[in-house]
Image 1: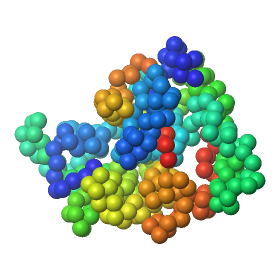
Image 2 (image 1 turned 135 degrees about the vertical axis):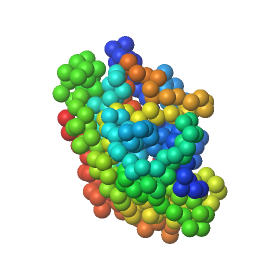
Image 3 (image 1 turned 180 degrees about the vertical axis):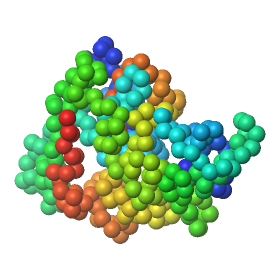
Length: 120
Length: 228
């Protein structure tokens, strides 16, 4: 997740990282991690997230580019120590080759074999 | 395989990883004319989301949206390119090409075995021994240390600068991603490909290249064997 400041909306944070910020903490699939108070504030529907505080709790690195003054927030590393925190598949949304968005969750009810490939 | 198994409830979704956009992959897609969803992942989002570190790679997801096999080398059918490489003679090839081909011939892949596993899962569902429980799925997904997570952040910064037209700044971050997670072939091959799209050979830009790293890690480890 590319950030120009260390604060973002809860909705944007969830879209980019898969972590939903709820009353019980930061949640992904069946996993919820309690957060320190005041990590997210604001009115319902317009909640702001203190990215540095959440990142520290979940083991997400914040890497700063000093030249451009932007940060990248990496994925969590502190929960399972593996690429997957939960076996629940992330709801990936990617475009097809005509530019139409496609959501993985539209295939619920079928088995899916997701194959990554490259031309290079 | 898709046409055989789709009537029994399997859908295949292909995801092409390419920072440069869809133009390079498009001819392959048009030739294959797939009936399944064929997607483009310019950001390499499957790397961080699923732990993909090389291609081709497969993830199995059941009817309830649960991953039952994490990212692993996947060969959904015989690959005509790999088969052709295996049969090619090294005679008369330029030394560097022969060197690459010699390593490719050492790759261990088992397309027939993989397809048999998928077929078993589609037929037997959660009764299939190849469909893993949630703990095993997490445990078998790629390790992620803080350094591995930092590699993902640097790779994303590189993508950000490359898209913005600052390729030089992108290289700084891609080099760092390679240093932090040397076992991630997609980060390396994607970056090398911008400098030398034919051989991903040695350049002044990166410390390593395809042939050097294949030899360093061992060609037999390029696609780790799929553990049933």
